[in-house]
Image 1 (spheres, rainbow, N blue to C red):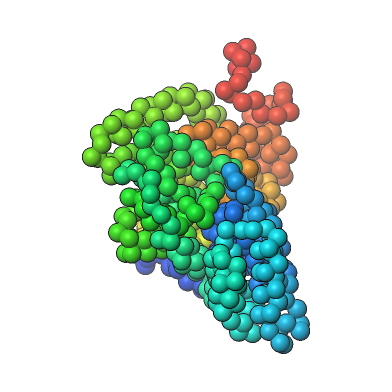
Image 2: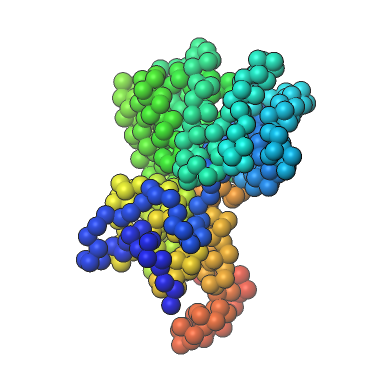
Length: 477
């Protein structure tokens, strides 16, 4: 009997509910009394900027804020690894009284001399906004002294939501654009925006485009280098993967440099293929690009489709709950789950907009619960109500799933296995199968009571671990 906070009722939609005629409420600050799964403005900014691996990232604030960022992400780098270190000015009581500008200046000088970065980002936290340190002035002074860009990130946590942190990060990145040479950039060239190279996913996507004959100037910000970002204004098209975090930058680049942008998703067969075809259509002056795209899709899908069908036979009819940061990822997950026979019973995001939820409602089945900026109690309520077999989320949702005895799939920034591209779709299906079909769930009290007469419970378990249908022999099947 978990109740929804009255002020949040407008942020929950049940598809097919005839009594709910008003549009879904979203794009608002978290309701008081609701322990939101969202994070602060500072968190949103570091999510976007930290994958820039050859830059220094300095958190100007108490050490606790820096602890939140230390090496928790699966972003990989092909070069420098400075971003794997978390630096803080460690502001304390006396700094609050007398100000922390001198401390920040000394820290930047020491760190730049030691690590020789190509740029430095300085993140303002809540306490900095309260005491009024002039972070911009410090950055200008150190930049002139050291000869590298030192960029302030206006990310005081209390200024808004995680989405405002994305905007602050985009504005910080924008200061680098247009400062590098565009020499060597080809007519058929793109930037990938909003992919963070989790488990090497950027490298997979980059390979697809290069096989089509398209040059990838840079990915902002997965495995990004400062020099590549400086010349990103020379690309002919921006492809926005995480629309919540990078659409602001794409619009800025369109306005200032005339670079159009398209939304793209690299999760699931449908969306991955659509991203490649849409890009090929944009470069229609060269018909061989579309031909290469078609051959690539045919080849890659042919490799994985038989295995996906085997998983589909086992997972048919199972139900899932999805709660992720950006709504655009939720679209892809709904379609990917449908491909392997699963139904989405609950879906939500932290930062979705009105149009996003309208589109989500269109592609979901009747009865699906759609939720914005949910909290742990609400998520637990929906998971129990819909009796789902799988919860897809991030590190903050994992304990909810396991406490309720539900299988879990990590689809957030902490994961270490690629889930994008065609290989990623196969990895996703395999992980979902291994999690959902594990025999451990028969021992969950809730499941045991609900299914005490089912064959799943009464039939003796022959194997302690699920057997991958794609690797079974005919005798085992």
